[in-house]
Image (tube, rainbow over all chains, first blue to last red; front, side, top):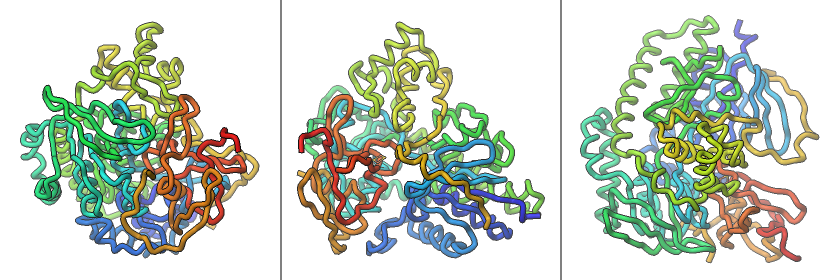
Length: 462
Length: 96
Ligand code: FES
């Protein structure tokens, strides 16, 4: 019976690895497609061969989970068809189009688990395209994956748990941390504290990073509004507002971000139904408690299905794999499935509190100057978005895209989509859900032009 | 002054490459982005404003880090590992 089942897992972070592990335990041989050179995802990203820092130094408090996820994949390595360095650039019917080291291939599946992860949620501010300005996640990758800092003296800005974590990791690695600037007011954290106690260990870690940074005399400020990155050829300083006062710090790099946004293009291309999620302030694939989407045999798990963090991702990956097994008529441990769903519910409660502690600045869109570049691919400015609304009546994201090219560039709206939706909603005096979402288009990431020459079909499960 | 600064993992095999006609040295395991930005302040110039760019997300999402080779190919610098002898250009339009 299972011989005709060809499961594919996209992504090898905590969700993808646990999904693959669960399928293997049931006797299936999944294909695991991973854009990275090695499994672990972003959070447990492995350094390249030849790097020697111990895992403890890379993953800190998360070292136990990182090791567990790495070991889980290593243990099933010869029972999965693992495809590192492989991009899924299109999904249609029951077929994926892949690109691996310049070679194209197609992959058919009967069941698909999308564990595509998330990237930083970006809200631009003046100077954000200056060399030396990176996302918080990017700053972390530089350190974890390459042993590099994004600068010698780095300012950290935005909001969310990553803000404090990455600042801490930089200071530990020997970089100078110029300042940690949280746009959320301190009162938001106090109000959210009771909810965050649902996961006391996670809460305690957050407090610990904060205390550590403060104890080293690193300026940590709340309720700030970014004004400007100084410098042309590269960042030389950062200006921000605190109440009515303007402040400045000298720095040669800035890392910023406002939480995470899910990578959902493949679910979109496959026709999964989406709905607006108030917590993520984004459209997400509709899923049941097990991770089933509206399209039969397509499942979503982990941060790519809605941002809940790595511990939730492991559970969601396992739960989605159990759902797949249930759907092909394999007996699964029902109590385990229920337990996973309960755990996910508990983490979701914590997530709500986190969102209250680190709210995205509600006044962002209203205060964006007209000349601010929103789309860094095509350099579309906020004023052009507003003019499209005012003069051409754009009230919906895809109309706005057609009129201004926002979201049409090489990143397909990954970096500008959130910001453009917020600006459009503000210009139309409506809520972000009312302006819809950018539709995905293949290729979901740019392909080298020479690609078409090498296309050859390929079957799985050989 | 280069953008990136090496904080760890110094003892890796050196790899030679050319950047804008200048001989440079990276290390085995460097991405193209790391190798270039530990030597220089940009990867490319924006095709719209001409402003310098040095990548943004470092995880293959923003597509801001494409860099040209002397033979006219483009590499996504943050997801491509440096190889010995690469010949890279941050401004392919500049006179040789
Ligand atoms: S820096 Fe974003 S894709 Fe390379």
